[in-house]
Length: 143
Image (cartoon, rainbow, N blue to C red; front, side):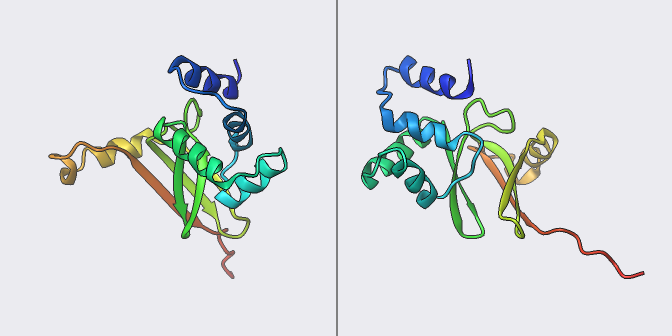
């Protein structure tokens, strides 16, 4: 079963509606981090033009922990979260290359373990940890 089929199955197993616009949104978000405008453009290329439907579907997918909303350099991106081998819906690291605007995801459980064991969290139940890193290529040092 491929990634999008797992999303479809989860929606069906919860007795929720798997609409054609939800299917299209899942397909366009596969392996991509997209802004709302990028999602809107990709969906309009598939014949889905209603902005409120796009907002409602994003909200639906986020409430069901299938999509996460992340902010990088004051820009809001959306990303599939369920069954993504690089992260869960709740704890993951995103690195933005400022030169290319490419977003890379990494899974580093040791970082999250370290953070959750910090004394600052001893009396707290953490909902999630999201780490956003903005970086650029190292410049060569003159020798």
